[in-house]
Amino acid sequence: MRPLPRETPASYLTRLAAAYHLSPAQLLDGLHITATGTASVPPATEIHLSAEAARRLSGFTRIPPAHLARTLGHRPPPAAIGMARGAVARWQPAPPAMQPLPACTACTIRRAPHKAHPAWIHPAPGLPRIMICTRHQQAASDPRHPAPLDIRPVPELTRPRPGARRRPMATSLSWASTITTRWYDHHQHLHDRWHTRLNRLTAATPHIPPGPASPALTCRNLITYPETLTLATALDHLPPYPLTRTQQNAFLHQLAGRLNLPRLAPADHDLLWQRLHTR
Image (cartoon, rainbow, N blue to C red; front, side, top):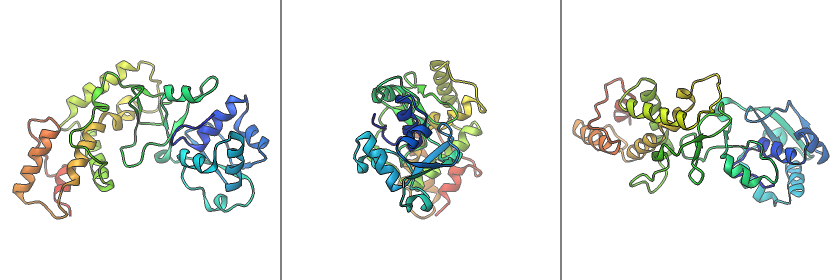
């Protein structure tokens, strides 16, 4: 069984063990890999493998080590594990900000020889923290919901953006994500559009399980995704110096058109206004 692109090692190891009716601990023991730490199901826990442990997993799965390392979207292991000479592994808690997202269920089923267990993947780099499968029309934006959402009623999430030839720069994306998050939380500018989008998402996925946070919060990154990318692309073209009043008005007029708003006049406490006055 091959891993999904950017799947976490803990997710892949759990699914691989389940395919043989084993627990992850039993699979590691069978490969003579010494594991430490407390194991639990993803996404709350991650596992780090030493080079020798990764080699043994590669031999068992018949996947070349380099290909396995590229596919599994894990972070570099701690030095104590990465420099270990023996076959060792360590389970560690995953911080909430670093926890993976549920993978597309249809993609997971295609990779599983038997009953598919949930898979967890890291979001694509250089984009907002979401998972979107355009082929199967599923998406996720929060690890607290173990199942992806049906996004067929929200086609704008997968619609190509005009003029988007490359991914926005990291700085612009960070600013845009912060700005749209503030707009969303304070019901500014695009509230009606985002509220409608939220209703369509929750109506299309009635099985959303109850959790510690409401869908209004856990779906936020997904709901604001199109406008976040549009704003990030616009911020990419700002000069590295504060804009004049005329330039600010021209930028806001063009941005309003890209966001399909009649006008955009942020107050002086708006984060967008602060960005226009930041070098």
